[in-house]
Image (cartoon, rainbow, N blue to C red; front, top):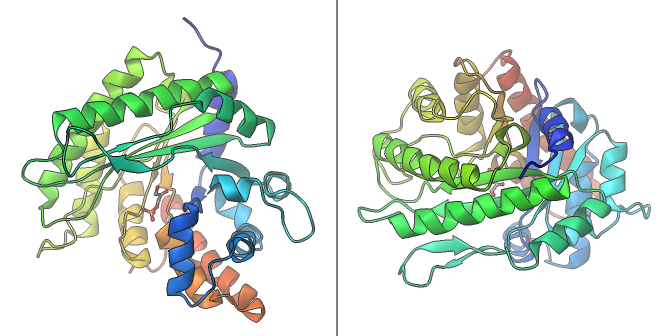
Length: 335
Ligand code: 13P
């Protein structure tokens, strides 16, 4: 079967336009609520809305951000002036995207491993999101490194779901952000992260090919190749960059683009690693689609005070500018 993916290819190009990245502001209601509470903000629907408006309305955000990923709740909310989020964000020169998976759940048959759910009814939901102005979608699968995991079963279940999601998105005219995240949890060395990520990506390429997904019309969102949180030796940015691009080189040149997640790295380390990655030779655009490494400083600066909206926006703006400079190759102070 052939599928016309011209529109997806065009959108993917806009998502990875030179010097721009994607802001991930798509925490589920549960995750967002606990992050608000940790920062002393009551976890109400209105506070979640106000926070996402603060982020999206940051002055000149479109200079460094091509898109913002929202969750379902936000996509159906409006700016304080009554403009629905998708329309308001388009007007700011930014593409709105939507997280469409329903979360990583315990995988039956595989104790301790997870499979991401959300395929049931997906085609109908995608059609509705497209109708409401979404330009792209996101689905995240997670893989935990231990001596025994990820198992072949978890890799197959999750990469198959990612491919089914990607094919459904392209049929709905939405670019799929395909996110196979090998988690930083654990004490593994950087080489083990490389080995597991390569295995997951190989399985993913096979599943995508079996479902005729057009690689030029997807955006891959991988983890950087990095040691586990509890590993005693921290790889430097050059080591991370070289290991990361080495694993990615197995992707064909036509891949629409690569946007990295930050995965729990500090904002400064994520930027320094990104800067080194961007200096590597690669056939596809390489940029950022950070969540925590962009928004954590903004949430801390704002902490729910109407008077501190500008401080929150300045904190976000600083991180977006630093990462945009990193991918442009003109970062002055990588920390
Ligand atoms: P982090 O950058 O915080 O890892 O989040 C990116 C993301 O979109 C997770 O799905």
